[in-house]
Length: 150
Image (cartoon, one colour):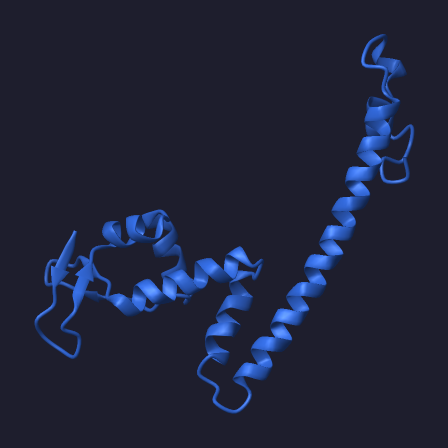
């Protein structure tokens, strides 16, 4: 549900927390969490106490969600938001954070590739029937063989 805002600097449409959640496809609890974490500013409230979100809140929440989609942590997203207002070093800082994230993702991809390859070797060696004691997967999980070295 949207509400018209008639006082102050914003004359656009307001969204309730539920409408904002539906608009960006997150839960109300997620929005509240991002507020507590400082990723979203506390919204104005109606006299009734209900939160009122404007277009800036929608844009900020979409920024957070897109950054999460690129693998940034919430702490890193806070840093990106702060760098966005740094006219001298902001873009350089954002680029540096992106390269750091790429390095982290590359390391995670390498580790996941090693895990997949180890598990594939174990699965390929498993006969799929017989006594559980003869299963190389179970043996590796019990420490009979290092699952990462398999």
